[in-house]
Length: 113
Image (cartoon, rainbow, N blue to C red; front, top):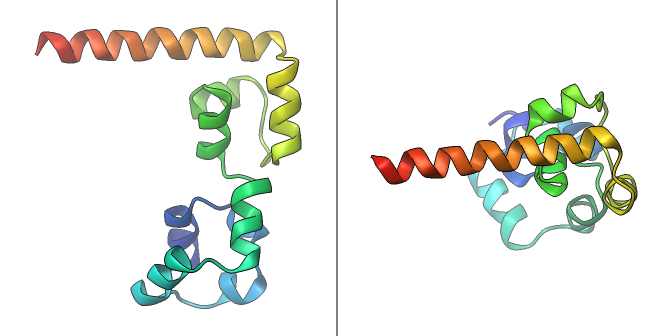
């Protein structure tokens, strides 16, 4: 598989991975090995980032669209995410409430069907 696909399956930001990971195809066996016995670089990326947009959105409790509306275009690391959580700007507070409303509505509709 392509390195971008493997990075997505591993939940890491591709540009932050080592060059050898980015430049060579990854087999399913390689991916399983990375999951079962992750190297130090993978452990560090998962712990400290930078994180891909979907992981950043999940950690902040908002949608990926909410990130875009909030003007977050770059990958964020754990320190940046922690700072946003500790002192949330107005856009983040708003996007969290919007996201909670959307999830509640989806749950309500699922319950009806």
